[in-house]
Length: 342
Image (cartoon, rainbow, N blue to C red; front, side, top):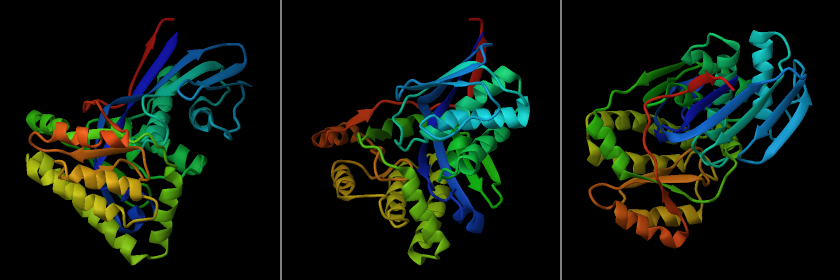
């Protein structure tokens, strides 16, 4: 028997950062995001030899440990072990023996929610194997708890829900970890136009999102008025983005993204830098009407809105920076799991 699962990565189109505590707890947050055809993959092969073999294939790390109810979560395979610990503690109640293989279609720290999406994928594989009856909200919330509570990793709440639900979603975040996911029914031509005009670039540099998020969190805790006001504006821009894409107001999308980027840079230091500013300025001079970094900031994936026929001109203008456009498609489905005979 072989158990497989995959969960899609996401683009945060507007409102990013408003899902992070304590802002979401104090003021309520909202985000509009969409999943794309880059995935986090998990394969589990059950064994009965009293061992657990773990392998992260994309970063070439593996480890074999004795099967037990609790695994040490320190090290680079902590996400896998953290999921295993909660699955055993909350559902299975006994040690398991198996091989597990994971890989993600985007580099770590890329800003597409890769870590949280991987956690969702791993949970999905265990739920498929062990016949655990978890709904979409259950899986997303469990993924959030494993990352933020069990493992103590800084971050927000949108990635887990995007990976689980899939598609275009307007998400609302409240205190006590309450999340409401509102799936958007976009007309096909509006989604196609957005996909054509939204150009995604990988800058070839990873960043440590946790450190940026910690600065953002500290600014809210310390009542930094500039940071709080910038985050308020980001929440407003998520609502404007929802209206623009639902009603096909394509001319508004770039401006909303541009306003969001200007607000996002005020949330914390490290979100932008001189190189990123230069890339953004060049894009705006060559057909883009707005853009932003996906995720916490500091590097990873950059995307720009290029209306009409400006897409090719923009791509060529950024070639001197050594970055290339990333092909992608929006997806409608979220977490998917299945079992096959070995």
